[in-house]
Image 1 (cartoon, one colour):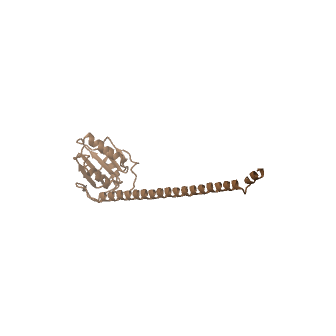
Image 2: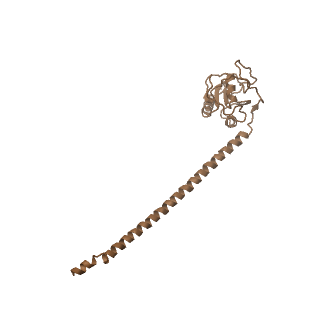
Image 3: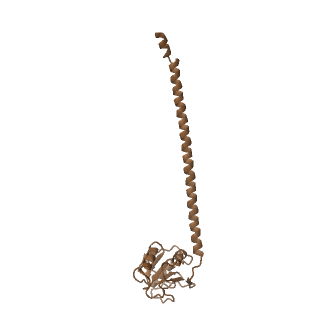
Length: 220
């Protein structure tokens, strides 16, 4: 009996075979688990890549759509806009008598006004504002007929728009006047949809005489 018991515990005996079979089974299970994890990882990566491509495609398409919409808006005519043709662009030190009120071009001071969304609470110098228009800015002016709501709406619009400025202009005939180089539009209210259209078309628009010129070095 004793010799039989020792025989069963030898490496080549039944117990050894069972142990090797168990190890082989565990290794096979581990290999199946590794393959399954690799497949899952591949699927996840594939989904993420597809999602990234789809998101990138959507962003590009959306950007192209916005660009196209802006191009269409920039080329569309705006009812009531007046243009005044070619205007002189000399730098002068003296005061200038302009044919438009507010002026939209002509000889002007060598120093422009800060027009990176700057809202002035007092009238500004015509000659410096005109120089800002030369750089592609839109100048918003208003008189005493503008309501507090009008002024607030326009101020918020200007503050959010580089290459724009705003100031009171008591002598103008219209309640609100939008001015760009050689271009002008008079409206009665800040809620007029032509206000946004004017900004879209003329902030750094085709009328700009010096595209990309600074709007931050100027002073009163």
